Image (spheres, rainbow, N blue to C red):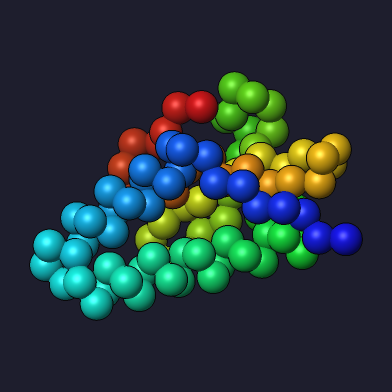
Length: 98
């Protein structure tokens, strides 16, 4: 049985802000980035432990996957079987706080 992928409000805002910024210069690139991140995250429903652990999370051990220059931080819950996307973060930025 697959895990349910849930986007936090913060992660939605991260993705929206990033794509809005890129769209000012290249709307097609922003659309491609958005679709790419959403497609990349969808693999977590079948393989939630695919990303390495991120030990600096205050909530315990988090995980992250990378899409291009973006780090996608997430938390896996066995009960209920869910993956919560916490942040979509450009690697050049200072690491987010959890």
